[in-house]
Image: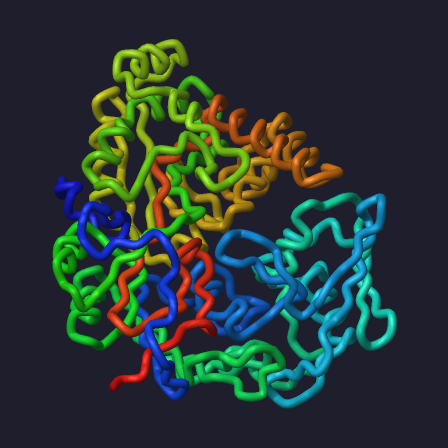
Length: 501
């Protein structure tokens, strides 16, 4: 088994070294508006088309930078205006009236108006929609235009997540008469357009000088993709990239005393989740799930990995209202109790597969298998390409257990969806989700989400191995980049490069 300390993609750096900052970097002098900024990532987008491409990598690249919705979710998780300058909500919560920005143009030069919004949202909610966020708008009853500058969205029932959803995949707006191949070129309203995509290497964003809002501060931003963390760190050290969005213990040590680079810590919504397939008869038994959770020493795992990951106990993090550190006390590490639970469940010689995408270090899977072996559970590890995992595990449900880093803060709502890849058909969870999304206030919604978070932990719906903080490195002279929630979004228009003297 590999040493856990050698994990590369799954872990982040400790904070006990010079140059660490907890806030976003500010301007470091007069800016070079013709500069090109190079940013390093680990996970490459699977496409450029916002109507069909899902995943965190596309959200980092395309949402808000190239394509925009009526709203935008900023790095603090707040919903702010975007293509809609303001909105009104009816007293019953079923009617949202959006007042659109004026003077907006698409990348092809055509004018933006209400017709484009109606067409885009109707396409996203259509029965045959391939939009990755389509389900987030399932409560939408109708979308209509009232003149060129107003759109009305009517719901079947209250949905406290609507404004957030309109700033995500399902809410991206393209022209109603679009004739561009969105797999090859962009046609959004954002501050950047897509330039060249070198598959397996990089994607270039080019500034949209006809942007309707505040112009981007750099001419180009190049997203570079690296298959391993060392290659990414080498790129930062050599000057190939200016910003690095991933870290590990080796990276931390490498740049600890290097004054040319600064290190930033931020908050994130991400959970390394051990998912159970509830269609497996053994895993449908809650005693078996509790046994598995109690057999994994997560405190030991966190200690081995370093200081920038931490225990959570459910799909919550400290900067979400439903956070409770008491959830880490559910199913504490206890080998003997785990064995007892398996015995009570009448389960012997349990064999399970653990199917994992190769974007994660194999040491994580090996750690889980070694832990479960101590209670007599035989785990067969099956590592595959991410595209295969998406088809066979996520869409096909062909697995017993899997490990995945979930980054969407609304993923917790899927514990109320029996058709999600966990196949968790729990009525109580579904009730909590319905009550949360149908709440009359944000306070009420968050209270229901807190109850949901507690329930799924106490029912061992999954196991949450750890959550992570955002760790970002940047060279001197670069500022304005996001440092919070960067796993699921990376807003680049504010990045600037100080002019070289």
